[in-house]
Image (cartoon, rainbow, N blue to C red; front, side, top):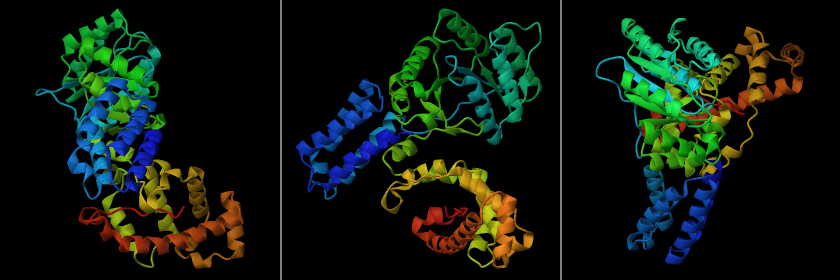
Length: 451
């Protein structure tokens, strides 16, 4: 996400750093380029105008122009203003004083409401809440069936309704009653959508709002639709009073205009972003982290969050000890790869790394995800003795392993070479972990395979 904007802004800052000193002229030129970059990223023109004015006011001051490193100060100003544009700080869900908290999920048809409802249920369950789902889309049976399937996938109860309950209001009231009886503290209500905003839809949503008194009304928007998503969110807010936004398909949006515009135009925060089709692909939105990613500074904190959420700390610590010793076997190598796959695609992980210094070309790295599966297949085709002692693997064993895994002898040779390089690399990497600072050096991180 934000790839195009990130590339253009980094070029602007590179040119600024190349200047002997900042002047009014080269600063004006940089601001023009930033303005064009934002407009090309499909950011709302009013947002761009406001952003440029605020950056200009701070960057053209005497204190910045005469500083020892004015280029760096401009980058900081842009980062601060981007963070402010995106909302300033993470906006968390609010909860009712008396359970169940009702969260109304609204939006146009096809925006991803149903999938987002299930994803949000999963997120809340992991945070020790007890959510329940209900679909009140009485017009599309397929939508209710889809939510029922997704509810099973995320291990969340769903109120299916009875044959007599043909109205959204009846379904919602019964679902809330069942949530109370079942000790559920959150009720997620997936509402119907339309291709366009119409009076029937708004009347129905107003009735649900009046009857359920929801603590949150979350508007779900498709990031790929750009400013159409922003306009729809603005209209929904005017007519219904939304409290936040879930932006879906952020992983496929290289421009990012909707994310950068929606907070300023609607006045409501972006709370979650969908970054994939799977039910675990919903992330809390952190304005400061996203601003850093746009400027090529990476998002190490989100990477650490993923590690803490998905990697068992005892397993990671045990693996780290093995990496520092001579006991790191091919079996451990395979397990390490499987651990890393829990964090998501390798390409996605590379996007979270800072795009500076020796890591600046990481985002352009071509990572073949099928290669990871091939490596696991090769190791699985080895005997336990071979996995524990790779020195046993001679020519005939390599041919047998290649045949058993559906690969070539050359693939097996490459794997053994990668394994040897990884052992050497990880010893060096972990030995220098203190350079990342006290905060990061204390955390147990899994090693990366040498692809």
